[in-house]
Structures are given as structure tokens and as C-alpha cells.
Length: 406
Image (cartoon, rainbow, N blue to C red; front, top):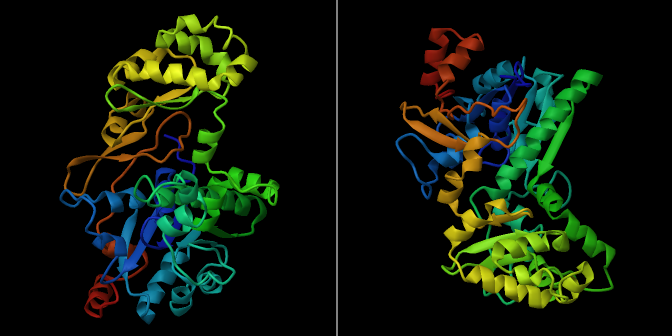
């Protein structure tokens, strides 16, 4: 199996999901990733109790930390810092999401890390970027990515009594981690071709702005002419394409149609819905007529879909030519044949030898899904990593007695 980052070593001083998820992606691309955790507490996310566990398997930790090795290290001690420097000497990448105040206190700034390795690529994940009044402040994807950068505004109907939250846990974090991974890959290529190591920055704000970029650009273009319109308002106020929208089934489920070229797919859709007579109906027999009478066509499409249950449409629409999708929940997604066919969910053994599954990172090389390995238990590889850093058994024991390592 081709893993293009085989031979790359990364040292990660980061916690939670945004930023560590990048390291998880890189392990599946072949890199060795060493996760440096607090010597006593470990990654703060290990203590989160509102997420399911089965034995040692904790999805919120396994997802961003797959394939890594973990060392528990007190970076506030001289000995701990010396060990970190030893780990850095032959590393290609240093990755952190610590706040600027913590980076300064622990001497994890660019100039500090490059004292140990002048050629290392230095990568920072942050909430709000490295400049401006908010650079010193932390944030999570629910705040900095979802709410501040427009996604919450875009999906929350104007008459909603509450702001709609992210549809899933670590939603923005996972996208952000993937973005960081791409930045690291580009920086590695840049160093290989120019000899210059980059400083790479990705923030939850920058990822959120990129995800919302089209709406932001549109708003900027029409600034002063009209107020920005959310996707909810747009769908409600400009129904010119009856083949785009969410349609309710007889049992209260939903089918999505996203046929941007509505007239191109209209006849085929009518045949699948048992509405053959609409194909030659003069209200809908040209693209212009269909747009002009979109409301009437949409009502007929809605009525047809409402006449059958979700399971019927899930099977019956398989041969539909235009883009569509069943609106699925987690269990249906896990059992979706396309997930298995493409290797989008991967099996592996957890630390207790139990078969588990995780969602694969979305990039594949040479038409083959990357292998997925479990995440490390807290400080699981401390002794091995200390030996690799040149510490003797006696030194390792003393470091544990002194509280420098876990």
C-alpha cells in the first residue's frame, strides 16, 4: 500500500480534536506521529465524560489520535524540555494548538522549537488566527467555526426560537484537522523543493470562512444594495426550480433532490414518481415554462413523494438519473453500501483486542483506503520513546520518580 508520507516524523503538542485530527490523518498517510501529553492529566479530552466508551475504546479520542504514539511529559521541567528537544531533532514537523500564552510559558514558539531543529516545519492551529485582538483567545468549533463564521446564521430559520447547533460532534474540528493536514503536506513538498521550512497557520475562523466563502463573497458584492439572504430564506423566497429541495415521505422521513439542471432531469423524475403526464404538460414542457410554473410542479412532486414511505423511495429512486439523496441518520450511514464499497469505514483492533471501526480520513491514494490503527492509551509509549531518545533504564526510572514523565 502506497503511503506517501512514510518516513516523515511529527511531534505534536496539542489536545482536543482540532489540530490533533491533522496528526491522525497523517498517520494514515504513513507518517510517524508522537503525541506529547501532560504528564499527569494527559490530553484534556481524555476526561470528557459525555461521550460513550466501551472498555478502553473512546471514539472522541480514537478519531483524532489514530495511529499515534503517546508520551506523558512535563514540559515545565528542564528534563522534560530536554526530552522534547531530543524528540524534535530528527522530526520533520512540529504541531501545536496551545494558546500564545502557553506557548510563551512553555517555550514552544517558532524560535524555541527551531533551536532544537532549524529545518522543522512549524504548524499552529488556533481559534482566531495569530494576529488581531482575538489572537490570544481560545475557542471551539461550536463558537469560532460555526457561530462566528456564518454557518449557524445560514441554517437557522428567521422564525426559529433558537440558533441551530452543529449537526455533529467535532464537526468543524474534523474539517479543520483535514485542512491542517493538507497544509502540512504542501509545506513538506515546499521544503523538499526549496529547502525552506514553512510556518503553517490554520484557524477555526479561516476554515469557517472558507466553508462559507460563496455566501460571504455574494454579500460583499451586493453590500449596500440588499441584506444578505440565508439559504433558508433563498429556498423559501425564490422557488424557481422544483427539482431542488427536501420532500417529506408518508412516514415522516425526507428525500432530498438537488437537480440544479432541473429541466434536464424533469422527465426522468416524473417517470420515477408516476407523474408521466407532466412531461408533455405545456406548463412544464420547456425549461422556461418549468421555471415559470415551478411552484405548481413542486407541489405535484411533493404530493407524489408524500404518498409513499421512505423505504419505498430509498429503493425506487436508485435508478433516478439526477442527483438525489435519502436524508439518513448515523445508523443508516454506517450501513450504507457505498460506505463499505469505498472503504470509508475501517475496522481495527482496540487496545483490548476487540474489533472496532472508525471513519477513514477522506483521502485515498492509488484507489485503496488507508489502514486505520487505534489511538494510544495515555502515555502508552513513554518508555519506548525515551529509549529511542537515548535514555537508559536507570534514567527512565529516575525520570518517573521525579515526575518528569508518566
